Amino acid sequence: MDALTDFLSGTMFWRILLYLHFLMAVALLAAVTLQAVTVLIPARQTTGNFIDRFHPVAPANLVPIVVWLYVPNFLLGAWVYTKYRTYVRIPMEQLGYWWTLGSFEFKEHIIAMGIALLPAYWYFWRQPLSKDHAAIRKWVTVFVAVAVWYSFLSGHVANNFRGVGS
Amino acid sequence: MTHALDVNERLAQLDESRPTVAPASRAKATTDRFATFAITFGVAFAILYTVFERLNWPLFTYHPAVGKVDFWMHSARSGEGPPMYWYGWLVLAGPAALVVGWAAILVPRERLQQATFFCCTLAILWPIALAAASLLTDQTTFNEQWTTFALWSGVPAVAGAVTLTYLAGARWAERMWTSWLLIMPIGGLVILAYSLKSYFLR
Image 1 (cartoon, chains in turn cyan, blue):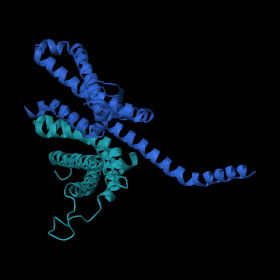
Image 2: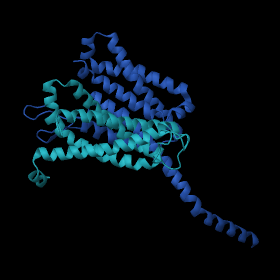
Image 3: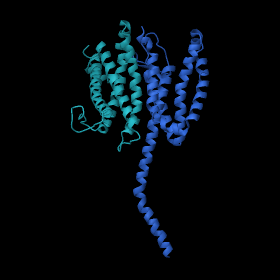
């Protein structure tokens, strides 16, 4: 850790971490959005317009990707969060960006609720898929997708205040 | 002799059938246990996290500016920068929910579903009773005696939860079991969002 910070300046080190967090978030967003769309708009036919045929990946195949991106990204975000608390949040308070601040506070709650649902999410998507759990599987997937989308957007707004490229 | 041979033959058949049946039933039992754990963990975490956040009970407080960790809740100290409680709530709620999830495996499914129904209705009724108490009482008195009000509002909440669990019965407890997995996190988030209203009303 010390060797890393000797090599990179402190700010550069945190910016690289934040950028990595962003890249993982984009990949997670893609996977979880694809899965949520698939469960919300089930395939009706193999022909038809683009929306009707928009099922390139079986939703169950996305489960390991979502879990293996969500957990490390959660941990990475929790690490970067220490820098946010001192370097970003204090100027935010001083300049009165209360909406940005409040939205980011809510992010910590929604993302925590999301990670606690991952074991159940994993279970509901186990093969063979249970018909009894079709509804709860759908809505747990949507919840995880909403948590990821909300976190991405509020994180992006906070980054625009003081982060990579701001 | 013939009878003895028959018995031996039947035993041999049983031995042959065991390796094919046992792993399947073991796998199903493991899956059922994991399902019980996962559902209970998700529900318990949502309730515990919301409670710990609202009561501000972190297992530890982290002071990022100085890299210092204090056990339990510590306010900001001069020269040490702002404190962080989020890690403390997570580290308290996570293992506590793990213990609840593990304990759930040991309880018969029907009892577990009824216990889940009771705990979830209690988690809904208690804040409602507390909110009603705050509306019916002078705000200054309520803030000064918050702990007393919080404890006493538990009485009607427990009574209501016991009544609803009794009226719902085993069938409704079973039907509702997986639904709590969404109701509790969403309900928790509503309470947590409401607690942040001061940021949006400035």
